[in-house]
Length: 275
Image (tube, rainbow, N blue to C red; front, side, top):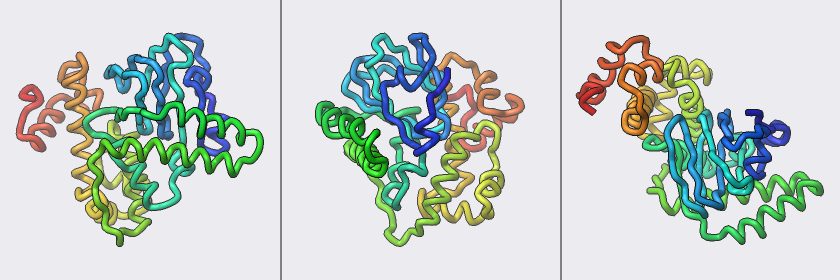
């Protein structure tokens, strides 16, 4: 797979048919979402595989997938999927934007994706996609503004189907900044790095400060979030893959099955085989 990232590299945003973004010629479009957030507008029923788990998606759906995920679409029609990719830097302009990116739309511990219905496909095509085509060769600032508005509309429409959490209005934007980046790093590195100090060092803050921030924003310490991530990844692999416990152990980056079993038992009260 080769991901055409020329525009992504330039402004951190791209929208196109999935087949055009990915240069591989085969019907199966396999790629990694890298550090980008992805929104897929599904126009025909299809199957997608994310992190080795398969999901059947109905037409007129919007699919949200966060960074650092292995994705494979089995596409029969090159115009089945409109793919929107964008970076955190491109979209994040306010606390509200940070909340959107840090929400269960992109970081859903129970699933590798979030699906919402799309009721206004013609409006999306007419008011946003055609407008984006027009401004792409005319005025970059307007192009970027329309792109940001399109992403925000799709996110807001999907938020209807999420239990929205209230946030203290006095939360520091710096806290959101660091927590968002911690979550991003965790989704990328959780298999290799399981200590809070690693993520704190990456953010150039202390472990204590990172946990203070996550408790205020997410109601959990950084250590609890790492543990929760690992347990939920185990549950997904146990329930939706053919991997045995030993294979899951190594998939999640544990050195041996004994350490893995002790970890699961300590934090859930059950052995891996009891799930």
